[in-house]
Image (cartoon, rainbow, N blue to C red; front, side, top):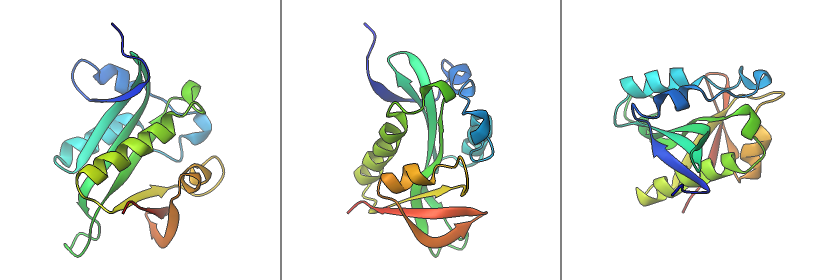
Length: 155
């Protein structure tokens, strides 16, 4: 029996090719790293990176990677958790998978006792700013690597 509706699945050898096949629209490629880079970063940040394939039934529709307890400034002064990457396949956008992904990460962060949910986004045309603002994120006044830092209070 095939499971219907969106769900997250841990990246394994069995679904690696499906994850690597996720591609955003060409006009969005400047705003988010490809899945292969995210998985390489997950490999070098074990315990912090939380990569997941987004499936609808058995169909791969996206990829997300959360960061769980990253040392934001590299000096131990602030530990943050949030959404590191979100790649929704070009033909699957506008169907609620991005919202599902963000809500799934929020649920995981709440489960872990986290009260603040961070995300960064590339500003400008074809970027995801409107999407994140629509979900309740607000710019916190910071900029990280040319990206806007957004915050959603979970408490």
